[in-house]
Length: 202
Ligand SMILES: C[S@@+](CC[C@H](N)C(=O)[O-])C[C@H]1O[C@@H](n2cnc3c(N)ncnc32)[C@H](O)[C@@H]1O
Picture 1 (cartoon, rainbow, N blue to C red):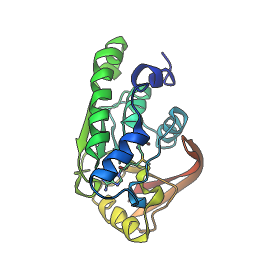
Picture 2: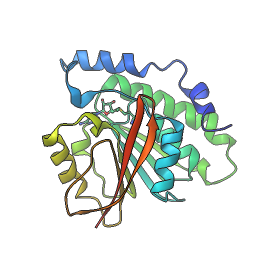
Picture 3: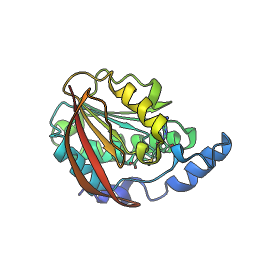
Picture 4: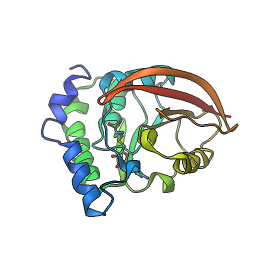
């Protein structure tokens, strides 16, 4: 199976946009741009893994993980130690947990390499309260629609990452001297062309 085949194997009955709309309505935040939903593509995740030099044993975090696409695509493409998603909305988290169960039961047993051992983890909660101390790679697609105040909060949060952590923010960038700016490259998301901003925690 190719990474693109995961869409059919795991996600055909998972309607991320509808689940996000339901989840936002349930907490009265349907108009909040900070919770804008959008999905990655397998190509975008392959690009992110390539620019971050992802390798066997790395711990990967997707901040704002939606239905879990980035988490499972990353685990499929590189034999990570752990692939973690953090999502605020219970409706999306529940779908991601279902995807995670399918991945463990249907996909992982097919591997003949270390990808059999990758631990998938989906956390229900706020990215600003997540412990990132074991992260090697952190991706924030969710900051695409963050305002300046939330970008500052994200930057402060990411300063807690260990030195050397590779950080990718989609669309919006970081400006703190705590991060070395490595590259800005185009990457194709489900909703259109975006910019992947790569940093290294100093
Ligand atoms: C653009 S979507 C990306 C989904 C997934 N990472 C992907 O690439 O397919 C951003 C997600 O981040 C979530 N989100 C936004 N702010 C959050 C926060 N403070 N804590 C946890 N999740 C958050 C939203 O609910 C949404 O599902």
